[in-house]
Length: 410
Image 1 (tube, helix red, strand yellow):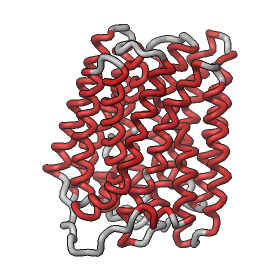
Image 2: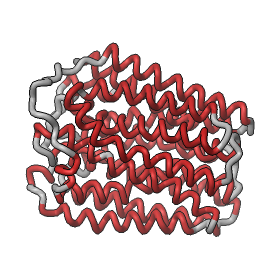
Image 3: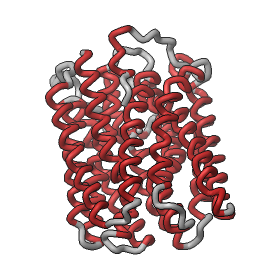
């Protein structure tokens, strides 16, 4: 299994390196290269991303029947096709096709990748393996973002096209590595069929987890696609700054990712999620204040507020992922965790629409993000009655053969 863990990390790192090259620049690409307005680009991408809502019910059944590795590999190939769609886009229709394929592939990927990580890991509590994998993905994403920042300084549309093309290639390479080198347990195709999405959504505790994760997750998706637009087009800041901010998250994630999880291990998982949500809300307010900052303060202040956002992510997402894996019955885990991705699908739909609000006001999108994070705190309160055995992570000693999961890799 050591080779499988290592191959999984390398494949996910390559995947996220490509995403770092292009994902934060998707709306910028649609406006600068394709020629759409900010409001039009935001609306088109938001509508296309809604296609992802159709994925979780199918993904749960595919994962149950064919296993998570098959679904993850298929998702990466679909995302590669989406990047190619952006590369060929000549107008709103082309952007819609590219964004739609990326949305379908992204949702399919996240519906299965955490099941795959859980299957490859031998840990009982999943915060640590989830956090370790997140460190690898974060570092790779940051490296890709840093590369994109360098390219942005050239102010070349051709260079942006090269970034999109390279993104497509990374998806194909990652899919090959996972398909060939990651080994998982054989799938029991004779087992009972997966439960339906409606059955999962009737579970009020799980529904509350989905809703709160969506409300809080909006901040992350908005940060990725909205920050370049905010800094470059609203504040008219330096071209290198958005990519440098994303890249700075690499160092912070690599140093503090697992340490944050270990530091909060004594807290209830729901309490840790609330801490993360509050931190996102504060970040939204502080970032909004950049509108009124003197120009000379922009760069250091942007790095300080971005560090706060990274810290919130290191708290919120490992614990929400672990709780999404711990809550469902074991035999229905694939369907539950696939349905959990509705949280991120909805956030990805809402994020471009929130970015489009920059056409109305420079402060309005940040007010929306802050209000959403605070609403997530309230919804998280509904999870307080879950069993203590689920809400408190099990203390786990990582065995020596788990070392592959700590290999440096959003």
